[in-house]
Length: 291
Image 1 (tube, helix red, strand yellow):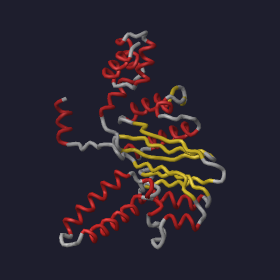
Image 2 (cartoon, one colour):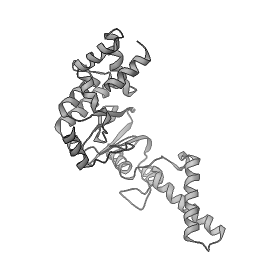
Image 3 (cartoon, helix red, strand yellow):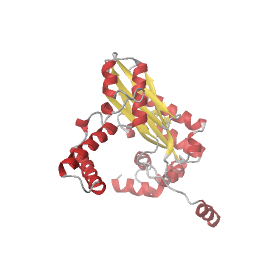
Image 4 (cartoon, helix red, strand yellow):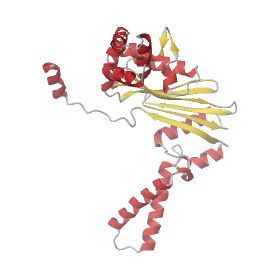
């Protein structure tokens, strides 16, 4: 079995790398036989949906004592993501991963579930539900006994935030998770913002000022630019953000008052970074008629 054979089998069936490898091993390198094996298992048929875009779905968080998992599973339509079978799917995947030590998505897909793997389960549910389903990402997080998970799930799973906080209590940690969910900070502190991001933003700001205030001196323009850059940091840096429950203080002050420290946080929003397809309904109907 060669890499070229795996590539050819993937192109012909749309099946995943691991499924192609297993099929080729079972077929002793015979590609035609491997195609049949994938078809028999329903993998090739289900995987035909891989050309579609799954940008809807849900995020979720599951915890057990000092361990938690945050994950995203996608569907093609929002309608399916509200279906009980889909909700069961994400719960079953989440709890299986939570009880594992999987570090990569590939490892997670090979975790045992019922009589097969997570990958087999997703393929089977794809065939039942009739849409492309995709286990997109996850992260396992562990905490110490004196730390708290801050967990907040927005709109039934459209956004989920998992934070690890030292000190305080679970309610305060949840409040912080709500902050992160609402304000979507990109960095913890100003020091974490890459120099190229700062430089690009400053360049944009200076151009804006030049277009708005053509009669100001260079010194005044520089002060204005620094002021706007600081405002930019207050928007993208968690500790500098205005605290959502009390606009008179920032998040750093809220943490200090409650003797808390944010150790880490993860925020998942459904479909972020996925280029969503805009369907032309008329074209779709005609393609089905002509098909």
